[in-house]
Image (tube, rainbow, N blue to C red):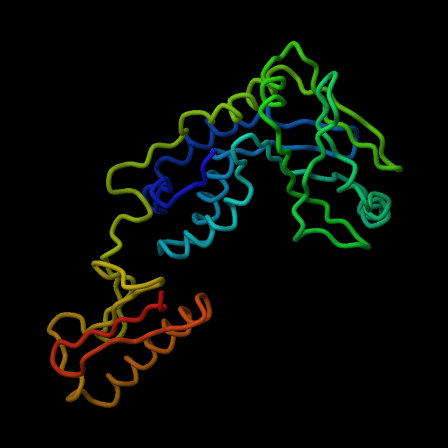
Length: 293
């Protein structure tokens, strides 16, 4: 299963009109992908569509429109998309009594070594937990896990007559749950490459549409995306309307320009480690800010 790319993400404006129908489709798709394992642990199996929905909702809530910032979200969320021969899940430890949350979580320290997928007649397949979330003396209530299946294990999992279950054998929590048939069929679709997209990117409604458009204007100075990026984070800063001769403008215009250069240059440097500015002073000059490749 391949990672998500920008061309598959709908821009914030276009997404609003599609959201209700997409959300209903996604909820129906996720329904069989939720599995309780005992009374404390719930798994939600992830794939490209469940992760795509999370990305769409994140950029909607945060109002993220810039392609490079959307790409940053994709870089994070793509880690949850299962690869070929993988199953992926969000594991949630659900404790309703606030006073018991920390004691119960402490009792489950070491859980990361005790979760497995079991196929009848085969050795257990251990879950791989996200190492960035693990600490020696505590466990978070939300964990991201994957199972890597060998080709013969994929073949066995796809035969629904072979029993499959999720088992936890941590010393304070020994439980197992059979994977129901509807859940199994949904996961088999993942192993076979995934379902058709639940959300169609409308023409002109993708997050990359309008990359050459204006990002903002301040005191007659425009910031826009370039026609062709020279490097990561590339923006163009220029005079709006008639092009200014930057050697002849007054102090206030220079101050506005400096403010924009500092802000966008600082963002590029913070995100990519360096920022280059390319320009020719004089009439019609444009300032190109981008990170060196």
